[in-house]
Length: 196
Image (cartoon, rainbow, N blue to C red):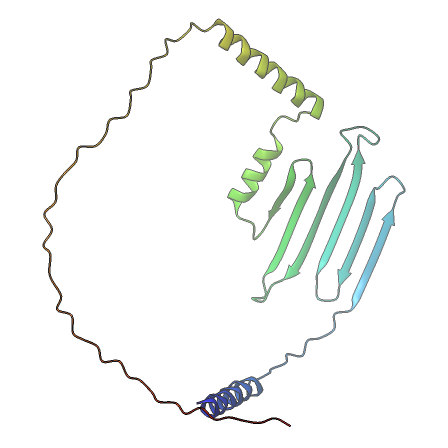
């Protein structure tokens, strides 16, 4: 049995090893795109600007400005755009902003619904953390006042649980005939061994 197990294991290993070596590998040679322009600026306050353009008409430009520096409302507001030629030869161009209101894209291949939702989210009123805390506190106070002025409600005692009614279910009893079992007894001969 053990030899059979070893043989099956060796065959399975050989089959799985053969399938690993037979994979087809294809490589696609791509042209190295020359970099036509690259500019970058970094300010100590965290603001930045960079631009690059490739020989394949790809382009990216982004700038970030720190707003409300040194306050609790400090945020980096980013604006930018990029463009490239997709696999179908179509020009894809995207303009975007990113900041406290999230990422808001607009472009040739961005669905108008996505842009509209992102702009709507950006137009929501902005609250500082202090204003949000004050608003939550005033809501809690208003709730506690309504709880205090509410009329007391009569509490009813919950109903006591009732015991389920007992039900008699008829059961058919089947007797199984027992057969005598013959006990097999082996004779063993004791062999005395001597140790030196």
